[in-house]
Length: 324
Ligand code: RIB
Ligand code: CA
Image (cartoon, rainbow, N blue to C red):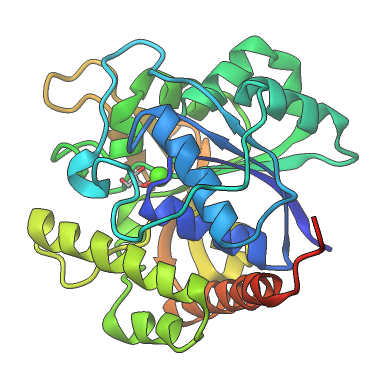
């Protein structure tokens, strides 16, 4: 039985792979892709969602653009990590997959309330759209099974020494989500840094022999170059697919109960996720926090999903066009 999800993302190299995993793995029923300002401005993250869906022939999943700025603070983008386009590296043609005109928050509300069972939200970006959904439509919570997000960290950050980018980009939105009372799983840097796209992983994508597999290699090669330059990584961590993998098979991502609070005021710590893994009466448990990753099963699911989508897309490209 596939799990219905909505991905809220800011493509973004790793968001793109997360979309492919969600669309290509039979354990997931991808209801929609919503976009938000994060790695780049929302116009670019939306265009990138359209680009990756066009490349993968994902034509039956609505894409809706969401918030262009955080709830309160300054808008930051991560052009240093993802490039000016937000998904530098591969050259994409003009996308044939379009976005709907409906705002992301309204699309999420309509799909959530119209679905026969509660839906899992998988945010892999700043939480602005999710927070706004909960503010605008508070009754929607009964239609949300769980929030499984990429963001935060049990240890240090990446945008600042204390704060991970998705949390740092909109701490007030993150605070609203973490205090919502909804079942929540946090896949932070402490676990996503175990999802390294090492040369043997890139070779598996190359070995698929599909155009989409080649695009993934180009995405991870670019991402790897910026991670080497900025943080001295030997291979890029594919953050966002970890959240999708947790939904696909909980055994791939080991979690523990924790109390998580988002710092809003610290001069040097704003956006930090303050995680207490030890039960304390003053800090009630409000999240499952991911601690370790089964790398082999993680990459097996992603390579298989990309292979499935890539072969289908290449067959569609080779199919004779109907006479106009
Ligand atoms: O800190 C990593 C997160 O920030 C990932 O979601 C990446 O795509 C960026 O949005
Ligand atoms: Ca992201």
